Image (cartoon, rainbow, N blue to C red; front, top):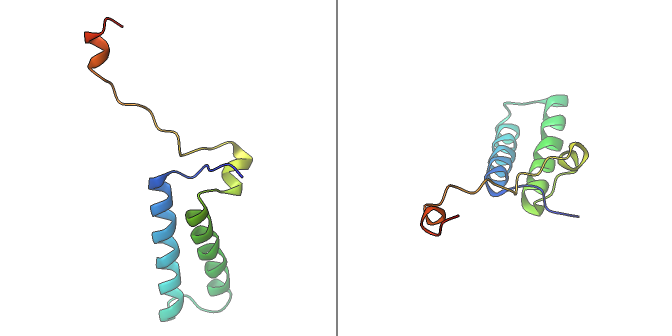
Length: 79
């Protein structure tokens, strides 16, 4: 599968997964909410580690590509 999760997105996913896991562990989320949060945390962690997201693939999102910043060397080369 092609990678479609960029570095900033990966960090956010992994931090969110850890935060959800901690909330479940301390008991802030209970019963059905804990199960749902656990599934979401597992999905976020797996997609963050594997750098690919099925939902991004379905909607055509790719956060690995970033715009290049403006370079002043273009002015000097006559381009």
